[in-house]
Amino acid sequence: MHVVERFSAWAEDFRKLPIPPEVLHHAKRAVIDWYAALLPGAVVPPATMLEAAFKDELGHGPSFLASGKKAHPRLAALINGTAAHTVEVDDIFRDGIYHPGAPTIPAALALAQAHGASGEQFLRAVIVGYEVSTRIGAAMGRAHYKYWHNTGTIGVFGAGAASAELLGLDRKRFAHALATVTTFSAGLQQSFRMDSMSKPLHAGRAAEAGVAAALAAREGVTGSLDVIEGDAGYGVAMSDGPDWEKALATLGRDFHITRMTFKNHTCCGHTFAAIDGALALQSKMGIAANDIESVSIGTYKAALDVAGYEQPRTPAEARFSLKYVVATALTHGSVRLAAFEPARMNDRITRSFMEKISVSVDKELDAAFPHQRAARVSIIARGRSAEHLQPTRIGDPDAPLSDAQLDAKYLELAGPVLGDARARDLLATLWTLEKSKAVPQ
Image 1 (cartoon, rainbow, N blue to C red):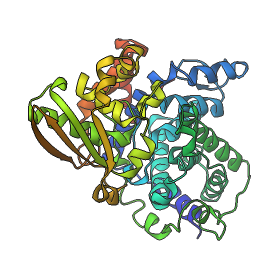
Image 2: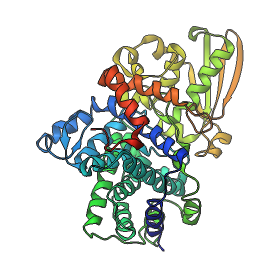
Image 3: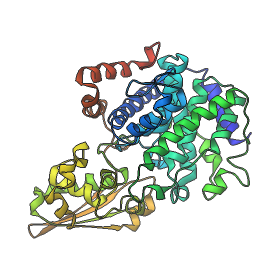
């Protein structure tokens, strides 16, 4: 069988099985974390601009935006997917260099709302989308990430698989949904190497593409079943020869959704090891920011390529400025949403502190990417120096956020949008979602 057929066969078989309790728990964690990213992103551009752009299509349809407006599933997936990737707090699958929640969950949610699916059916679709897409992302590897933005390019598979599962497509139609969505894969890294709104749109467009491909497959639209592994297919065109046997080997036994990274800072994930390392070393040395003479950071090359803004002018650039976020962490103690407000962006102390920071590629740490995200931080302060190796990021699978920490993150981000009472009510609903006859609207 072709790759898409093997994925679809597994999905059809998995549909007949109970969801393992651990997998179910982690699926709910992923959905809670997605709402934590969705809600603050829904009230700022570009999501608000998309609502204005498509205002004639809003107000009717069976699905809902985070704002409460009705929409048809494809538009709901587009706008909610964009919103969930805007403030840079959405989840990560480390080995796939990929944010699966932003494109996968809005596609599943839009169709679940449209078709009156239960909470368990929705969660099952999310799991299927994560398992298919994370394997493709890991197989495409570092070569793919050189030019492509995986949340757009790999995200179509998460959204497509979740949509196909939610629609209950048989293995034949499911395979064709994956084959069709493969040709929708897009998203260039160059689009966020300068200030733009394209990056979150990649997630939204992937979510929309997944819904479209699954709906089309349901009606009989076919795709090339060898589109992933063929001689002119996805793997050859956009990577350097992925090992599809390895990608499929543990499908159904090792659930990747149990190994998500949930962000502990509101910025680019490539900066996290440096932030965590800098804060740990500052605490160990017992120093204040004004005691520090210089900071040296060695990390993997992708972190410098993606988060290389030297003098960020906008919140989008600041989230991708390694020097800015580390300076913010050391001068203010954290990197939360306030770090990207005008007062903090223009803070003289933080800006001047950036001049004390130097960054470089650490060959040893670079060789371990993407399976390890590490940073080596050195600080000189008060005439003494110290070094700290941060081997992983807080929030990674080997240093995970607890359920209580995830709740706190959600309430911090959702509360200002929904109000504390509504945010807590939604959180309680999400923790018992498998018992719900319907998904939230």
